[in-house]
Amino acid sequence: MNDLLPAAVRARVGGSKWLPLHARADVGVGARRSKAIGPGIEFAQYRDYEVGDDLRYLDKHVYARHGRTVVRQFTVEQQMRATILLDRSASMNLAPRKWRLAQQIAALCGFLALNGSDRVTFASFGEDGLRWGGSFSQKSRLEQEMDRLAELEPRGSAERLDDVARRSLEHLRGRGMLIVVSDWFTDGIEEAVKIWRARGQELLAIQVLDPLDAEPGEEVLGWSRLVDVETHERSERYVDARALADYREAFRAWQEQLQDAVWRVEGRWVSVRAGRDDLPDLLTTFRRTGLIT
Image 1 (cartoon, rainbow, N blue to C red):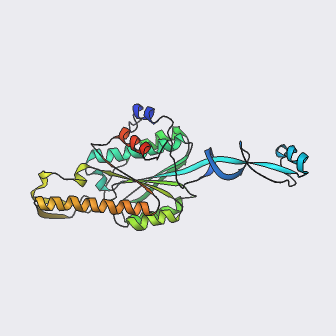
Image 2 (image 1 turned 120 degrees about the vertical axis):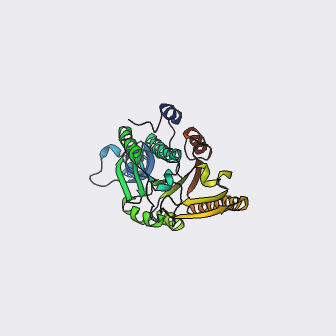
Image 3 (image 1 turned 180 degrees about the vertical axis):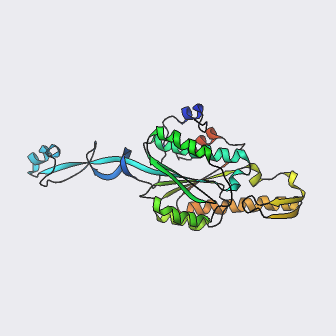
C-alpha cells in the first residue's frame, strides 16, 4: 500500500464532499438528490394512476378529498460522476516534489468524491495518450487506484490539451465534475475547456507548480543553458535582472489568462505550489472557496 494519503490527512478530510455548482447526480444509487423520479424517501410529485402502478404508492387521502386516483412519486438519490484527469507529461516531474504533490492531489480528489458516495474515474494523459481506469464507488477500490497512480512516471511531451479533450469525450457521460490536475504548460487550453463545458462537465482546474516555475531565483542569472524537458530542445541565453523580472511578469499574465479561460466556462480554479502548499493547506482552500463541505 502506498502513502499518497496519510492517515492524518484522511482524518482531516472527515465527512467532507464536493459541492458542485452545475454537475448533477444521474447514475446509480447514491446520496445526492437527482432529477430522477422513482422509489425514494423525499416526496416529489403526484401523477395519475396507471394500470400496473405499485398500489403501495396510491394516496388514499387525495382520493378521499378529491376523488382522484393518484400515486406518490419520490426523488431518487443518485451518484455524481467525478473524473480526475492527471497530467503525466515530463514538465510535471521537473522537481520530484511537484509530481508527488500532483499524485497526492489526484488521490485526495478521489477520496472526497467517495465521501459523497459519488462515482469516480481516474485518467491520465501524457506522451502515449490517454489512459483510463475503471469507474467505481467503493473506497476499497481507491486503494488499488492509488497504487496505480503511485506507479505512473511522467515523461515526454503531452499532446495539445484540446486534442486530449476531444478524445476524452467518449468516456465522459452526463453532467459530471471533471477535475484536471496539471501545471497547464500546454497549448489548446481555451478550446479544451470549451469542449468539456459543451459536454456538460463542470471543470475544476487545479494547477500544480514548483516555486521555480513561477519565480526562478537569482541563481539563473548569467549565461544559462536551457533544456525543454518535454522536447529536449536546448538553447543558451544570457539572463539578467531585467529578463528575470520580465519572465515573472509574463508568467503572472499567462496565469491570469488561464484563470479567465476557466472562469468563462463557469469552472473553478485553484493554484498550489509544491514545497509551500501541502494537502492540509489545499483542504483549507477548498473549504474557504466553497468547493467542499
